[in-house]
Image (cartoon, rainbow, N blue to C red; front, side):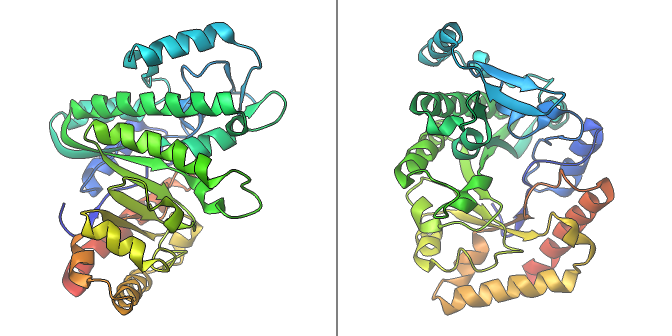
Length: 336
């Protein structure tokens, strides 16, 4: 990959899948299939990957997702599919991802494309049992979460591999921003084990694997994961990754990339200008240089993204995000 190639996180505010797909193909060097949460609750980042999960209930009217208490027959079918490597059982159907299927129709023979899947920590902490507890806290259900998302990740990778020579898969983990806080009361071991299984199974498929955290997190605790790309909210937390220069050095020295989420995907896009974003990126690289990081290598290993998905914005605001991303890319290649 060249310096400062662009990609996006996934969600867009459009209700027309064709417009969303066209935007990604027009603007992004590594186009991704669009998640469209305003089109349907089924395209919510948690609902989208629920199909086939034993006991899952999607209450579309109240927009709630939960798992029924006892579902032995569904669990039996689930584990048979896992053991038998029946990836079709874990497919994402068109009702849950209209943008995925239209994207595949439009791309045909791409060089490189990106997909995304919600990570096991965030998935497991956002879906609840009938007793009100998140399923991640139930050891058996946590194991199902890991197996479920791993199999869905493989299915998605193989689906996208039919249309492109290389496939990037981002694991979206917003809850990682709560690592070390009183809010996230799960062990580091459980976090590591959950993520490493999904990462490693994708690496075995020869996917390019990234992780996206739209907040601040403890990157040292994630540095043992076999990741190709680290993506974080650089706009709001510009130096959070650089607090751990050894993590950055180790990552880029072994061929990994940093995807700087520099363009805000919030309402702040209305007030930010090109000079603001360029100034922040210059400061980030100056800080990296002060930490004895090889700037030329870092530049080679840099990608650009919005800070998060744009699904909560208006359509015009999302277009501004993409415009700023492209404008910034063109200038950074000359300035840094």
